[in-house]
Length: 479
Image (tube, rainbow, N blue to C red; front, side):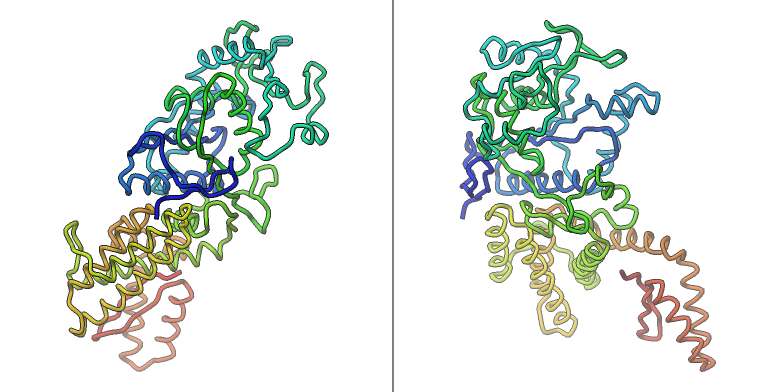
């Protein structure tokens, strides 16, 4: 089976055939950097990072571009509130975005252009659209005339007449059509501005991605991605600006679904959003990534403590399986051979990923491999199974996890990080736990079972589980 992707433009799954065999060009709309990234941003980043990883895993060379909008009303207003230059605010939040996405295991794109770096090219495109009769200037502003492009609405499946009738856009008598959108905006006093044929001003939001994608990927490229909320008007407007200039633009349009809180779309306007930093304070970043991949990318995903806690337990199981194999001295290497059963599971994993990047189903196969690894590890301890089978399954778990950007850590490092976070939440330290275990040991020695049980229960209430074996007591943190 070849990779098929759901193309928003056609409304159906299509086999992915890049323009140039063995190479794919991908443009994804990035954030407007006026605040810290939230979980909705993280979902888009993780989804398209996983697509890039999978394409490269299949041998396709990817040119991956994701932009930063570093000039916007929200950025200007926030910078004014803080009394700092707008680019200083944007730079701070770009660094914050990188820190969050690096922690989630997202690969950096090949190019990360910023809107302010392409003002000249935007002006050139706007001039060309005016010359072709698709845009008009009025009082220092420039608008795209949607009536001049018959295919406007094709991507979002909207009819221009219906959109006009139902338009809830602030009336602007200077527009020929209420749906016309700004390509260039005259600057207000104190705002950043650039000299243009229409006076001092700055570009509209939509024109930036049309220009930057053309600069890095050319007039026609393979995939344009972003969140579902960008289909209209942003992506519709991008296409409308590019097509009249003779650019075929994107061949496949991919859009990820919303993150929801209590079944409502997460949004800053509803004040029901969580930042990535807030999630990272409470959960290991890989838990957040696994959660974001646990549902098909096109559907919604419900964010809750309970969902993340369940995800955390699943990730713990996978890392513990790898850890227990290591404790037997089994550490798979690149040359570790597959066995027929693990090869068959790898094939099922690929089938899931080829089916429109179905990470939910693919993860099911990863955890199927985890269960098999656990079973064989237990059998190896009793001499029922050869270590080679355990090595094959351990490598399968690690390899498939890596395709999804997961299970790449040393298990000891993962559990150490988990332990540090859990102990901080429980107000415990390793020394304090060891002291309580020693007190319990002494209570058991004098047959004070009530005190021994009290200490065990107190630790359990603080997510510390004790395991007595061979005259020793080990402890571990659980969710």
